[in-house]
Length: 419
Image (cartoon, rainbow, N blue to C red; front, side, top):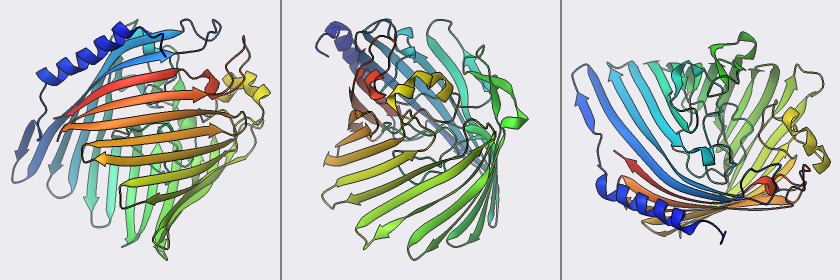
């Protein structure tokens, strides 16, 4: 890390400080109107960050060893309520990622350009840099008695565990992502039926799209019927634990699974989820995916979380990494089969919170340590520092010797405004 271009990194920090001075945050929606029959409000968020990477010396995998740059994202959010039964949500963003940062694996963030959804609501504004505008959410909700119907681009979250969430099939966060305020939306129809005070039935249909390398997102504009997913999930609470079962069709495969979460002795939290998947593609065959996690929160604001992940569709041997392109035609960005994750969080002061996660591929003995610190500048603004410290065998020529050995060392300084 010591060989980074320090002037460029200092320039990034200086630029962030200038943004703080000229864009003071607000503690309320910048537009809000309440009427007898309808309410509407507009909010926004601005992210500006400076990032630097340092990778191993390998001209086959990396064009440059060091890369750095400034990026940003602006988001506009609208929420409206019409009468007692209808609500609307819209979320649009525009992002800027310089060419130097476009293709880097990152230890601290998760990009949304690979989310499987129609490219019709996404626009590329540059051929060189990733200057991109998109409608991230656009949906209407109808609520009556025990039924909610939501139609349109919306986030679908079926996760119970935190780092590895095999049951979160649609745009899941990466295990190392700390910032999870805005989950990307997918094009879906969802029905939520409250069966009782502690029981619920969810019926979900998510449109699928064919890969299209000519679009900025990598997905076609019109949906592909054979890739559409249909999922049902039922949950209830029994003996202070939430139990859930799910099943259905995910594109070209069938799936059945479940989850459980609760506490033992009101001290030790347990979360578990998983599924068995039956692909139509015979070479893959059926496989299992599951995660088991333990967690505890102390009164002194310290928390700890430990998770084990069995990735049945992953590769069991490092020598198999030569078939990575075939793997990425599948359903996961994880390469190996067995993983552990350890996370710590501590609130040092009411304004400063720190987090750390350590992700370990047990098969090739590589890992990624991610460190995150967030300082509250005001009620509506925060400063975040992220460090990514990978370890493992680095690639040798064209040979991949470990998963996280491919990752760069990284540092990211970011300012977020909510207004």
